[in-house]
Image (tube, rainbow, N blue to C red):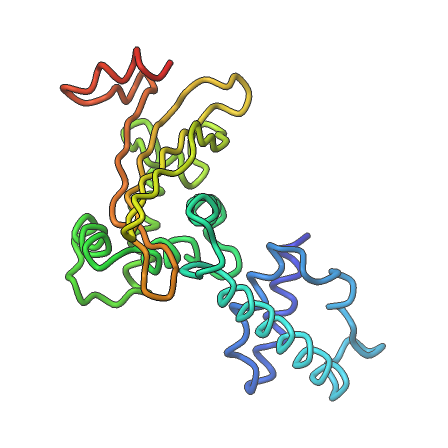
Length: 237
């Protein structure tokens, strides 16, 4: 039903040139159930689009635009977020990468990275240090979203086991603008350990935390820890 609603609204927007720019915003909001589907079918009795329809759609799309902008402003990097909240926001953004806009989760990952970590991410997808972040976010999504079994990071975008986050200990704040946080990914059904991540964070002058690096230790059978890291198996189970 959601896709049918989208295409009907897209047809209306195509007629109203002045609001074509808001079409992606309308699309993302259907995924978030922002609108009641029936309200978007408002039209005259003869199924034509009149001035009232145009004004109605303009008003609704403008509302969506404002909501999306507010959501983007709320997201990290933001001094209001604790280090745990930052990690939760990034992980949730990757899992729901099209909310509120396409590739939002991957843009969030780039936005919350220090310069060094952003460079490392860009280099991992073959991009230059000064690459356009919009294009880089899209490429990052393609890379992370490659289907298993060979891609261990697909779990981050929902192409793998269903997981929940577990913080086994409090963040280690060194009181010098740096912090270390351990975050584990556990199977939602069994509670089994899937992945351990270690987050190295840096604090900006405004108090907002950024990611400086992420250490990834995989404990799934198909992605056993690398050489020299087998000791994690006994220590963490």
